[in-house]
Image (cartoon, rainbow, N blue to C red; front, side):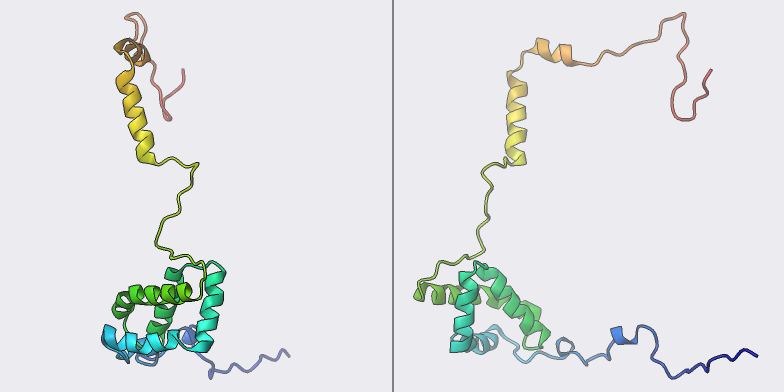
Length: 170
């Protein structure tokens, strides 16, 4: 006789670990700081704390752009429920400037992250298009006529053969 194992119905529902009650996450509740001024009053003293100050200088020396650091700081604040995402976007320029001031004060060469690095070997698409347009204007009309495709017309005594994927072959 084959024994079947007892089936327990006291298990979690599949996917239950991926959901949470509404309001149980910090970003689902009202923010702790509602205005830009309140959020800056929270962040600026933290930027000047000695422990954070030393870590910030280490990260700046590694070459990580200040925009990336400021974005990480404000994103963490949104996830912790400190402020909303719009307040976070508005305080980012102030955070970047404060970190730049800290870097200048410590004589550290840092990257702002606001300038676009250009590859000297890459030519932009607009420059290529303008060069092509200028070259077409310089070409004489005779060269343009030679480049035109010649359309073969069927001769009167020959029938045009059907072509295409579904055409029958004779």
